[in-house]
Image (cartoon, rainbow, N blue to C red; front, side):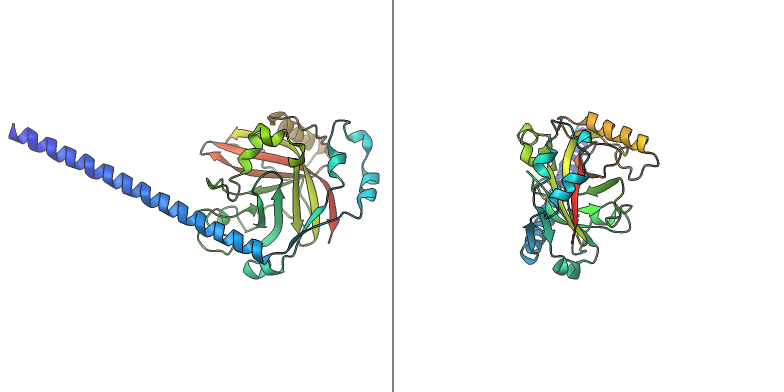
Length: 275
């Protein structure tokens, strides 16, 4: 009987010790997560203070309108509501001093996304490093290494982590809420690069199990690209009434919803202006 009691006490002690270690491990991970969020937020706030971001009027709207084939734009398409909008223009001089890999600045209406975009030789580095290159689990907003903003691919892709505090692409999940997609003023993404400013019109938002089929950047045939566009439109949880065709260039934003799902937004380029 004493031996059985001793074994039971040893077992209980082992369970208590194991539970304690699990709790301590979890608390350490939470502390690291919060510290990474704090550092990322502090860095983002400093970047905002040090960077001149302005809106400028489009002096070439009339010409842009002439170049658009009206037959390709649906009567219900809100394109004409957006084509006269201002551009976002960013002074990259201070950003380049901190990180020469900065390639753009992106702002997504109706979200917290308003960040410089970086690009490395792979799609791993900025999952674990901040804008200034320091180690950080919050990562940063980054362009797919295959893309070229000097000569746009058919599909330009930008990634970032879905942080619980809403930083990076943590607020991208808002696009799945009716409050966001029923507000037409949210259907715009503004981007500024070192050589041009451009405006993108949203045509699809969705949540999907992990897949890479929306991450193609080039298409050898127009028909295949058109099929791709229609597939992305069909996935959308909301019909944005945006007309897309094989001549378009599109922007894709992607982040995790959870370990098994992604949140994705697609927008088409509707105008650009050289700087």
